[in-house]
Image (cartoon, rainbow, N blue to C red):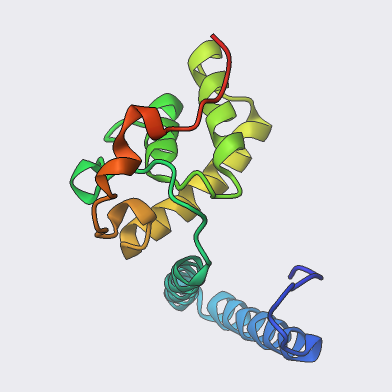
Length: 170
């Protein structure tokens, strides 16, 4: 578990005890599974932890304060997860549905650029990409991505070209 838990205000001992209890339960399940040569309960335990983890991530993400909205898809524009296993397709989907305030947004976009330009990713990049895509997929399945939320349309003035902030170079 991470050493730093900023802003949670819970005692470190609470996290240490929870971690120890989960490890003990896992070890007990593995021991019983090995003895009976039946690993179904281990798989069920893992699936339950994944569901619980996804739900916890989704709730934490939904509770984060959101910065001023710059760009995002409307719910009817949210694409389905791609049918292919191509990293370009999967990363394109991830970048499309992630919020620009997501801590992994810029790096995921750079992975997409690398995958498109070099026809794939390195083993190290694949490890990171899987972690990000799994997290984004969990949020998508929970329906908590910003682009999946209904929103009031922006005031007309905010959509006018003359009111937009200039950035970049030509």
